[in-house]
Image 1: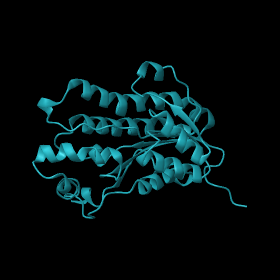
Image 2 (image 1 turned 90 degrees about the vertical axis):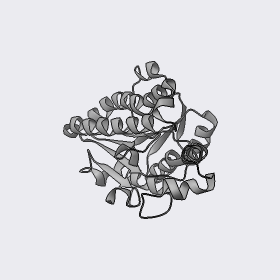
Image 3 (image 1 turned 30 degrees about the horizontal axis):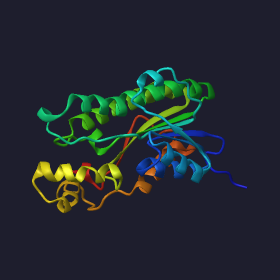
Image 4 (image 1 turned 60 degrees about the horizontal axis):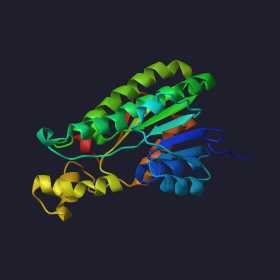
Length: 250
């Protein structure tokens, strides 16, 4: 009888209650992992956890003091939680800038820090960081998001180098615009900033650089995350894997 590739492993997915996170939870659970669904929304986290037979962790990842004291016994860590704010630099609220970097760069560092001792002791581990095409390319009006994702790229590469002797890989997944609530919430702000109707934002702003003119589906990203978390990805480390419909081809 064949076994699932992640049987006997424990995975943690942040922002796991919706969008890319929920898709990753389902893919990892299907592949045999026991999944912890970490999210600031306790009810949504519990719903997804119950669906896959996992467990929910209601957590505010901006509480870095608590994360600094954390120890995690997970074999797969998926850093996915994120937020977005769209505004010109001169109008960008410093508090929002700080909050985005805290959630999307500092908290992944602290979670990796908390998980590595267990991974090193076992001699195996997977860190998958959900970056973005904006980890490789900049866009106007997204200074905090772009800065955080570029920082996450560097963090991921450093963990790859340090983790290699211990059987731990670290990679980034880099989708372009994904059909998620995070993207949906940008449409109004993007329309106002660019002076176009909301119903033109996807075509004229979000898909303008891509050769494939559609949004990425969350399930597509979840499948790539699950592959990078699996046993076949032992040599896939320190790299960034784009799902951008050809955006970075030009």
